[in-house]
Image (cartoon, rainbow, N blue to C red; front, side):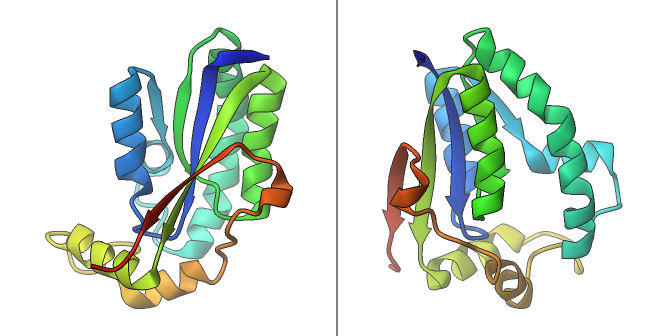
Length: 166
């Protein structure tokens, strides 16, 4: 296994800070950053407004990205993937990537309370137009019902980022 090349990926509730951490890691380590939201917005403009829409289009993107990310990793290019690893099923896709490429991985788990996430969601949503997708407490609750924290039994190399309410 190539220990120097690493796939970084993230698990955390909505507005926990996953994208902020992803950008920071990519910049600090001078590695490739791939952002799911950016790809989805470019490939499916104005088509993702609900959770159902996301569930429809997200697998299409992952299908395309699979071989691309494996190719990068296989060529010794570390990758930071700002794609959610928030369910056991989602995490299996990441496992396929690093196992196929035979590289190291780190699952960054942002263990952040609902209170902090909701506060950060409100801050993040300021300035967005009324009706923007995924900006309300109700949407937070709807999405969070699917969240499954990672377990040590899943066997990931995990780094836990803990943030408590201020």
